[in-house]
Amino acid sequence: MKVTVIGSHLCPDTLCALNRLAGAGAEVEFKDILSCHAALQDYLQIRESSPLYAEIRGTRRLGVPCFEREDGTLTLDLNDIIC
Image (cartoon, rainbow, N blue to C red; front, side):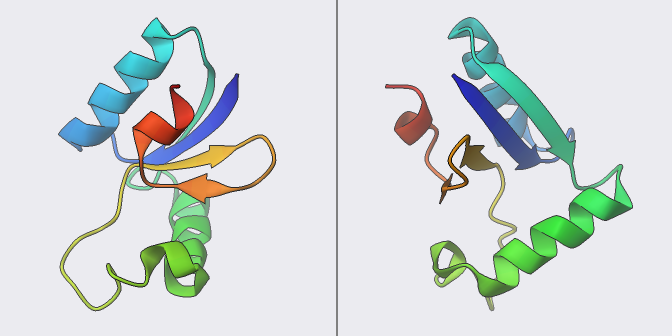
């Protein structure tokens, strides 16, 4: 399984997800929104336009980690990735 994880190296939920994915043998691409300006820009575009973030927009929550499957679909639920 290949998955892109969008998050922050400072976020405990992101770090936990990365560890669980590694344990599951997933091929992971990590986009760290706090250390890469391009990753942050891409994430903000997703956050502002995706229906996945409808409940998060307008709150103080970031909505990370976010997981992108190989087919391009997004989820905020790690359990959707690790079956």
